[in-house]
Length: 100
Image (cartoon, rainbow, N blue to C red; front, top):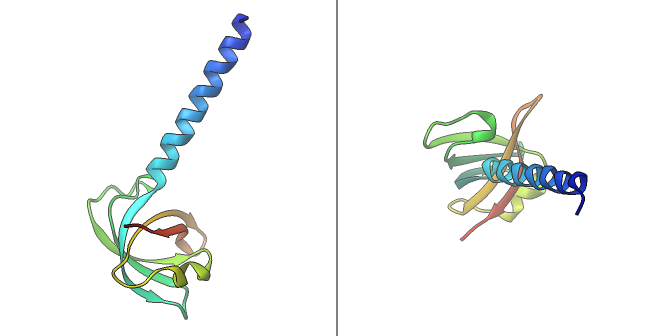
């Protein structure tokens, strides 16, 4: 294998590994405390949201959801994993799924 090809493979692997770690850092575990379908909001008790530099241990917050259909997939008391991003309307849940 040529040196340039090997170097390219190393760079590609490093980028992939970095993106995988970032994606894992973006996933947060939580529990549904309240759902407000009328306003498209959900209240979650959750751990740190590292990608938003929110490193407090546990807190309860109200979030907007990017897609109101997400709220139909969960109910109060469900354990969830989610991803959130800062948006012009505030911190918004971009992915939400029920866990065991």
